[in-house]
Image (cartoon, rainbow over all chains, first blue to last red; front, side, top):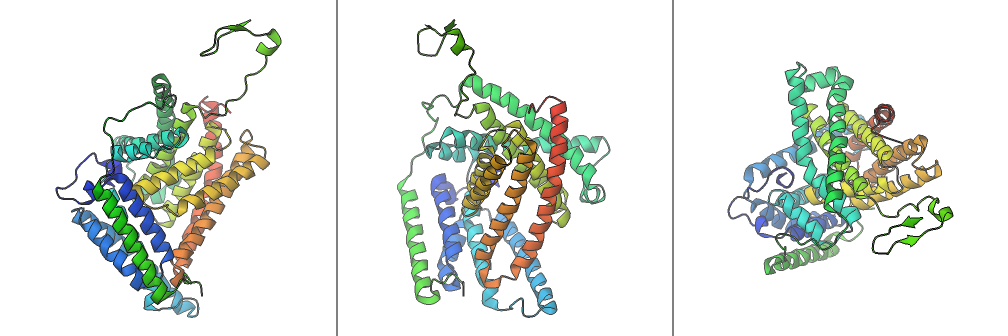
Length: 258
Length: 200
């Protein structure tokens, strides 16, 4: 996820990179809700087509392909289990194509919008978006700390793994399988101690800087919604409305609960 | 006796009032909010590292991931023994999952409901000051959040509910890991208390 780990490497001409983070978050929430409510493949089709174009416009074809392959593999494994289950107990698992298609379309739809967000957003933009949402410090402070420290702790975990390797105990899938408790102990304990120490250091620094006491902090760069953001949001709402209309005419609103 | 208060001139406080314990602040200290944020980050990183080292999400890594999550949660609730810590931790983790991965727009309310239920269990079992209350709260949180998440999975895959059988087995394995994590978390807290890192 670029949002978590990479500073700023948007390919030139990436459409999602030109949008505000709040617009991309809105698209994620709208797609999640539409995916849950819609049950007709016909109604999901327009959303799916536009979301695929949105994801592809981020110009990170390789990463998108990897994500698609992972999803296909996961669904493939689940399908194999259903086929096996049908062999054992035929009345339990129905093998209808439509029953497989709709959940698959929902997952792909959500994946497309998430890729659009993840492959084009920086951590700093997410933090600023959080700040602009006027969340209370009760939520804003831990959320900012968490987003900021995920890359730091990944680096710490990497250092712990390297230290184990130097001491002659490389952590591999084999060692994890053969000695699970020992592997967990050598990885987990240093990480927790490191976390507790970091939290003490950071808390002292935050108290000295007066974090949480003042609301008059001015961001270095103001985030404002452009006309492009409003147009994209309006288009997304229109598209979702069209999909709900198709669902009402062709699929009904039973939500699949027969 | 003189007492200085910010923004007010010094005034005389009678000795009987001065010796009274100070009212507990309703605001969260920044220190505790930062500890919650750091633990939420560690949980995410530990889950990711376990999945990477263990070669993907197999039953063993599922056990390990859930055990680590529960252990860390037990340590956090001992480090910040305050009503609402569990809900705040779950809320923050869910918000970040929503922001970074888009997953959780629907899971956020479910997680919060499970966390509130667990807070109630902790209160009924003696509050955050008692280890048994914390352990019961975490166990209830794991059970309720997993149950509610399975309900949501049914909503997504309602056309082919047989897909849920595999998921349910994986979730059950995960819950066994969570129960193991309760024990290891308790042991860990004992060690941290001995080292003077957790004071409760």
